[in-house]
Amino acid sequence: MEIPKNRLLPDTAQINSLGHLEIGGVDVVDLAKRYGTPIYLYDETTLRNRMREFVSSLKETYPKSKVLYAGKAFLIKKMTRILAEEGLGLDVVSGGEIYIAKESNFPMENVYFHGNNKTIEELKFALEVGVRNIVVDNLDELKLLVSLVKRRPINILFRLTPGVDPHTHSYISTGKIDSKFGFQLNSKDLETAVELVKTDTFLNFKGLHCHIGSQIFDTKFFRISAEIMAEQVVTFTKKWNLPVEELDMGGGLGIAYKPSDDPPTPKEMAVSVADPIGEVCNREGIELPTLILEPGRYIVGNAGVTVYTVGTIKEIPEIRKYVSVDGGMADNPRPMLYQAEYTAFLANKMNKIPVETVTIAGRFCESGDILIDKAVLPTVENGDVLVISATGAYNYSMSSNYNMCPRPIVIGVRDGKDEVWVEREKYSDLVRLQR
Ligand code: LLP
Image 1 (cartoon, helix red, strand yellow):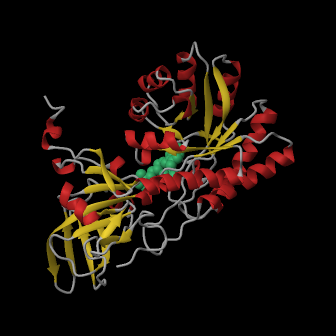
Image 2 (tube, helix red, strand yellow; image 1 turned 60 degrees about the horizontal axis):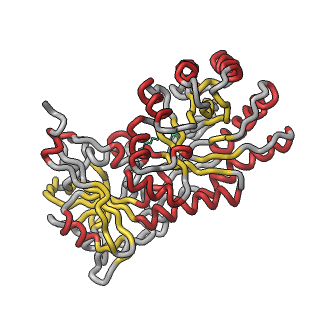
Image 3 (cartoon, helix red, strand yellow; image 1 turned 90 degrees about the vertical axis):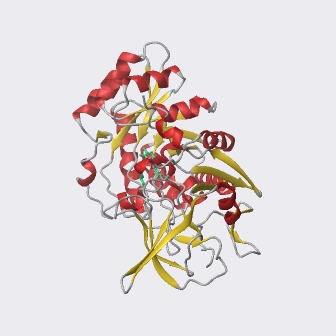
């Protein structure tokens, strides 16, 4: 087996003298022996590399800029500490995510609160702990805020729906008009919201936001949405006399899940959004807004792998060979939800040549719990340590206790040392809240 060149595995991945996969200077086979499996394994070096790369690519392209990490991809206390050290802000979507940021003393002025149905309790909690930037999704939310914010002013951004559908690979201006998120462009609600914000003393209009989708491989969709949003900057500034200080273009940059994937770089994403904004503001003589991007997957996706142990193997002659591992849809629901495709490695057989195509099945009680339909591997045997790459984003954060299985341990590695970031759940955790 080889380490793919497209940054599918963490940056520090290599094959050691024992023929084992090593990440962050730590032998993955040894790690599996010491901690048991499954393990969500994160390489801190890769996390920091991706953060620095994203921040510097954007800064070089558009100096007046900020990067917010989208916490929904993977948020634990350790993550918020690394983010603070690397100077990134944080995009949160729930009271729980705000709580994690607060618990680790993350600077609350760098937190932006999103969501299409923030509850009163969540908004109150956000204001109480010092969140100052609210991305307002709709008119009802704005009215709620008017009633809640009566002392210290807060900053608000309006989330708009630019009508770009990146998943169909075609620009259908009516397609994404059907979205639960954001104000529709040129709508009555948006006009009412504009009037409301102009007359309220405590709501400080800061700017505009959009997010067109995730795992995007074609940067033309970023460009199209930036063109639309730049025209909105003109409308807000000139027609409504509401200068746009911040323009937040969301996240969505795709990553590699397979050795053949060739996603765009942060630099390419930055250029595709910065160009139209620069052109339009220049043409209209408008001051450039601060450009914000919100990568989630790009920062954490390839920094994480999941480590499993191979259990039972079942061969159906002429049909397929099922290789079952000790995890599955509860720690990685993405293959079932999005038909996401992944790549497997045998950490203890990295020097062996791939010779067979097998199906990697999960341990959960559903026939559809298949992690990889066709994995090409060296001869697989019971007890092998199987690693699935690029599981750093939306795996831990979307995991469940299905079949009453405790969630895996989360381990971070760096410079030959391993550290437990989140303990493995125990059976007693399964009944902790039950009366
Ligand atoms: N900003 C906003 C407002 C978002 O809604 C999202 C993702 C992001 C930023 C970050 O997007 P990213 O850079 O990670 O693509 N569970 C799905 C992904 C859902 C993404 C939701 N919003 C998955 O596993 O593929």
